[in-house]
Structure formats: C-alpha cells, structure tokens
Amino acid sequence: MVVRMRHTRSKTRMRRSHHALKPLNPASCPKCKAPKLSHAICKNCGEYKGRQIIDVLAKLDKKQKKMKEKELKDQESKKEEPLSAEKLSKHG
Image 1 (spheres, rainbow, N blue to C red):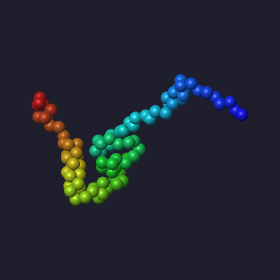
Image 2: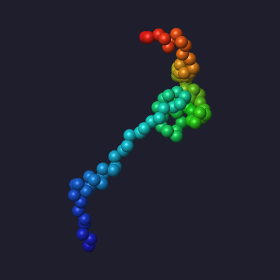
Image 3: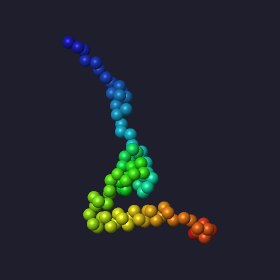
Image 4: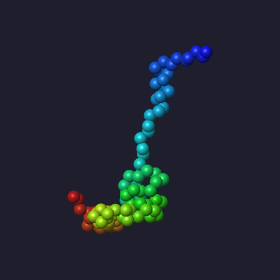
C-alpha cells in the first residue's frame, strides 16, 4: 500500500497562489471610444478592424433605435468639429 504524501498548508497555498484570475484589460473602440476587448467586435457600434460587421441598429426595437441613432450622430458630430481660432483663444 502506498504511503500518502502529506502537504503542509504552506505548500498547498503556494500551489494555489497561481490560480487567481487576472483582471481584463479593455481597449477603446477607435470609432465610438467605448471599452471593448481586443480582437473582438465592438458591442456598441458593431465594428471590427474598421469594417461594419454587425448592424447594431437592426437588432433594436423602434424606440431604442432612435436613441442609438441620435447617440451615434452626436458622437460623429463631436469628432468632426474643427477648432477655430476664436474657440482656441477663449479662456473658459
């Protein structure tokens, strides 16, 4: 009969020290700036590598669709708005 090997608490805990989960490190979507996992489709706008993969608006109902369209339009207008000399010279 085999003699059972004993392990101290220290040995057990040292072995288990590597079992901890590591936190996720989300990247930001280049189009909508929402946090997303790297190498994955953005759940907010449905883009991956600059291409539209999923039509997010098609999956929403009418009310949510209007809100999402408005949100995307606001994001695009903020991004395209160039700064004028007057805006740069004003101090809050």
